[in-house]
Length: 129
Image 1: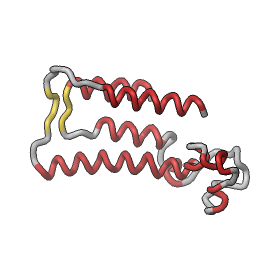
Image 2: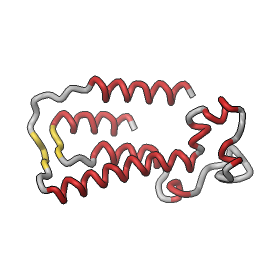
Image 3: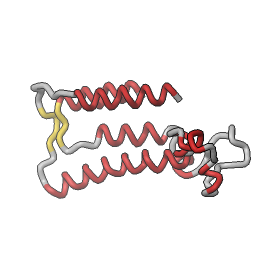
């Protein structure tokens, strides 16, 4: 939909033009094991987000089904039910109500170095979500 395209575009613009400003560091993980652990949590959030889009109907969400004129999820036997308007209750949606937004929030907050400007960025996006 147009809203999804607009929201994604605005988030990309915000991330591209974001400039950090001189703020104190709130936390800084210095050990290699700690950095890898936090980055692993961040990667988990991103993978959680992407795989949740497949549970919802990744191809329809990004307009591929409409563009090609076929139901790719049906062809791949990924349909949630026989009723296209029913709620999805599988995979990530069995765990949380909004897995796409949960993945984004995990990715925003899991950082080895949290500065004031990153805190502002994560807070603004959390409030948006």
